[in-house]
Every structure is written in C-alpha cells, then in structure tokens.
Length: 388
Image 1 (cartoon, one colour):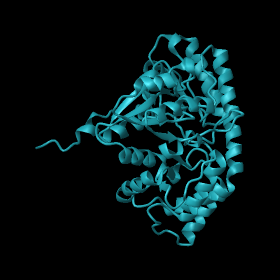
Image 2 (cartoon, helix red, strand yellow):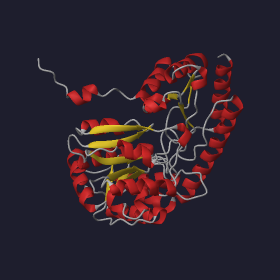
Image 3 (tube, one colour):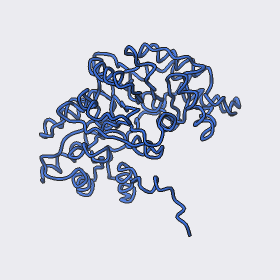
Image 4 (cartoon, helix red, strand yellow):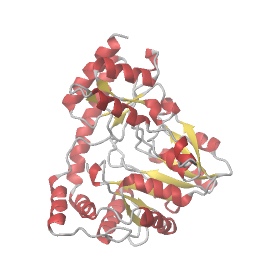
C-alpha cells in the first residue's frame, strides 16, 4: 500500500504543550495543580452569554456571509480605530474567522508561496512554524534573548533577512514570555521592514492585556505600515470567550479578499451565535475587560514577588497572562525540571523549549488561575526547589 500521509504533516512534531496536558490527564489525580493552560479562568460575562442564549431562542442559527456579520465587522472597525488609531473598511478589510488560529493559518497560506521565507522570533506560540511548513514556506527562526526582555531588535531582524524573506511575525504581548514591544521598539523594526519591502503578520490576541502605563501600540499604526500589516485578533483572551471560537483578521483589502477564499472553502463562515455575542462584547464589555485585566495584574505581581523570594530569576513581563522564569541555575533541562515538578509535587507547568530552542532553561507559568491556586502552586514550587 502506498503511504497515505502528507510528508509535511508527518515531519511536524506534536505540540510540546499537549505533552504535559496528557501527562496530567493520565495521572487522573484530583490533587494535581496546573499552571499550564493559557485560558482565562473567568466565565464569559453574563450579558455576552445572554445574547448568545437569545440568539438561539430567536432562531438566529443560519449561515452568515463568508466574511461575517456586517454589524460585527463594523464594531470591530470602530473598536480597532479607538484602540490603535487605525480604521479598516468593514466591507473589504475585515474578515471574521474561527478563532485567531484560523486567521493565522489563512494569512500564511494566502501570502506565502512555496519556498518563501517567514521570519518567526522565538520563543513564541507553537502554531506559527507548522502553519508555514504546511504552506510549503520556510520558517526562519530568531532566538530572542532574556537580556533584551525577549524583544526583537532591528539587528536580529536584519541578520535573518534573505532575498526569499517575505513575511515577519510579530506577536506582542507575547505567549509564552509575557514580553511587550513599545512604540520606540516597533519604530526601529518598521524601518527594517520598509527598507526590505516585507510584510508583517501581527498577532495581537493579547493586546488588551498590557500592564504598562503606556497604551498598547500596534505596528500597523506607524507610518507606512498599515498597508504592510495583517493584524490577527479575537475574543478568546480579553473577553474570556475561548470556547466561542471567534477571531478576525484586518489588513489591506487585496490580502483580505484572498484570505476570504481560504476561509470560504475551508470553513464557510464563523459560528453565527458567537458573532452576535461578540457584538455585545465589543459594545458593552470594556468594564469586564478592565476588571479581568486588573485581576491578572495583581496575580502577575504576586508571582513575581514569590519568584524573587525563591531566588528564581524572572524579568518583569508586562503583557498577556504568562511569566517566563529562568531555571537554568538548577542544572536541569526544562523538560527534566517540569517532569520532576509534576511527579514530585503534582504541579504542572510547560517547559520553555516547547516554544522554541531559545526557551530552553525557562518555564511558562500561566496566571490565568485564581490567586488561591497560585498560592498553593508557589508553595509546591518552593518545596520542590528546596530539595534540589
């Protein structure tokens, strides 16, 4: 029998994150604590859920247009204008997708020809590199450095560019590090991108969760960059709507028009119920977002304090809901540390190397958990390192 499998998919390793989720599931122990899941522990706000319920009872369960409800696209356009100062035409520059993940995949498949190179700064979320490979493109990774707070520098970007480079990934605030890029950082990157005539995929799914006094800045808001940037965002993180599976892409109409074809043939349209709920979230959910953001910031400060007391180095990450403490001084790989911590103290974390080779020697700690759970978890971590 001939090989039934695509060679690209066979060559892609499974997610390093899932390994630890599976280990926890196999332990089947209610005493296990996990700081591994990147999912808000808050319920979707009641007023948003109520719209979803009403959508069902009113029978609004039919397909929408491929691009999504026009009413939702208008709200996204207004929201984006208010947040980052860039306005997108809801008719031609906004595409509603099944989560941000579909928007990422659709953007990469739409923009990259086989053999094109996509620059991916790491550590980063696990899906970008496989999506590039599945599109026949070549992922080119940049190993970001803790001493730079995992910010991409113009020199690092310049060194990675070749004649085949077409697309650059920016993902700030960052998963897994919690790193951010401020305006002055982005201006230097934008100059390199314009000089080399490149494009940007800017994953801004955590843009509402930035804890600096300065507002979040999108690279699309800088001169000459809106026409070179595809923004990916969604409702999962800021609005606690992970299971609603709703995201969106914003960008030049020429790109969005072709992304819509990928979406049209692979998906058709995003869930109708979720789209109506998202309209309510954008119109009346800002107080909910601010409440959750304040709670996350309190947890972030608590964890940083505990790490400092334990002597575990961790830079002052200012975004998303992750910290990236360094465990190199314990003389173990990230995998070894995480496995021993799980087996000996029943505490699950994700090893940093799941997010790229530059994540080796670090752990991803999610603080999308209650303060009580974080306190228990830090007590177990402290007990574990006391034995090393």
